[in-house]
Length: 422
Image (cartoon, rainbow, N blue to C red; front, top):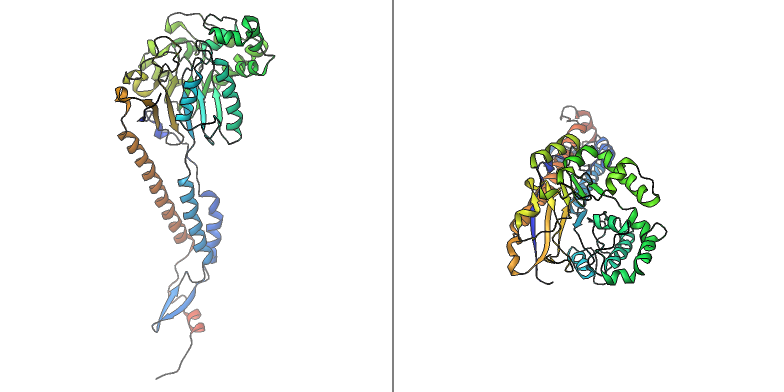
């Protein structure tokens, strides 16, 4: 699918209040101090027959310190923040999977990682429907190793179709994929914990927490909030679910993660299965975040596909619930086969939808907010630089005492050169 790339930007509510900044100047304070102490040795100078005091003449360390601060801050501000790219359900469509990874500048034309330290978060449901589901899994396995070597990572989450395959439910598996697996028995072995691919899939997380975002396949319900009550509980849920899938150790918490019983949304506790956008109550969701997950501003989910031209559908509750399942797989009947991903910039936490579109779906092509976000980012960087320079000046003023001409009179007299009288 070829077309233009368009972006839409939004910022999660109150995301700017989170403190995820780094003090780039702390390592330079000792150097500043040494330079300022050295500047105590001031010299007297004569200009046009008048006595002047030069506090800077014998202070090269101080000047060097100031220069290093400016250079270091300029470099720090010019370094791009880490990107996080979130991708929804892929369902066996290898070509679309490659397209979205190239679109987001994570892989090159030879399908090798070029995303440097970026994070790719895939929200589950790679398996079933299309013929190339296992090929996509193997691609992500290789890309994870390449990403880790560059400081990045590939985080694949569990979807309900992965869980269905683990229990031998192959009703939605494409015939070509099932045949390539060696039939049902061959697929049983391939997805078991005795193979590398099986261990990889069974050790995937259900929920990923990063900054003010939570990522999961399904979402939150009232029952989910009663089961997972804190960020610490999320890690426990992930750990116990992996143990259950790898070695059969099933705890009460893991049992909920394995439950694929369809019911009313509010009654489904499993965050992999919940179809949260179908019956979301924004007030209740906000209360859960504020009480149990302080600092979390949005949850990003897949699972429920929708037409991306329905602009408001993918952002609910003022951006606190974000559905990025745009029906990317062309093999799933009724889905639009739309290539799109959510890109998040660490630190500012600005998020934008990146998608390929034709003229018919240009409703998402609102580029002005992107320009505004970039301008704000650089203005904040420039402001930070000005503040840093001002702090440096204040440090100099603090450490370098003012010395009047009278206080330096003995020094001036000692260094004065007399040329006689006229």
